[in-house]
Length: 185
Image 1 (cartoon, rainbow, N blue to C red):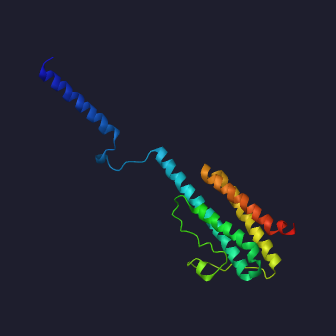
Image 2: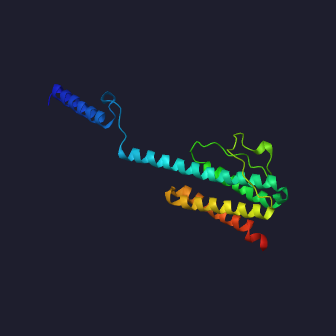
Image 3: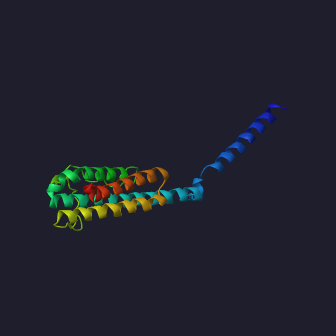
């Protein structure tokens, strides 16, 4: 083979390789690249997870507001409710972690105060029974509702988040017990 033949062969091989590489990359001249099925599915899953996280955080924050309202209406219950409220505040923070872009929950202070409340206005204040026993039963019912909501969300959650939801749901069930039956023991 002559030098010219080798050069021609190498040039042809390089051109074929370049053509193959261009075929593997996106072509800017053909218009916008359409996402593949896997990319669309990943985007759909990310949106679903973000919505699930937002619903979970909203439920936890609603429960936190209920604790604050009961504590404001019945300050004598603070020794009993403050540890549970702190736990709910930690759950709200944990449920919101992980990239949904949801705003951070209100600061978890041991007792409600004007400075610890969110700066955004609530649609309506949480109604609280005037009787402390009734207020505790209503708070326990809210804990059960939130716990059931977290348990229901398990099926749609990715594995790591499902474990967190299961833990928060179990904790909510324990809180409901402590607010009602646990007081009798």
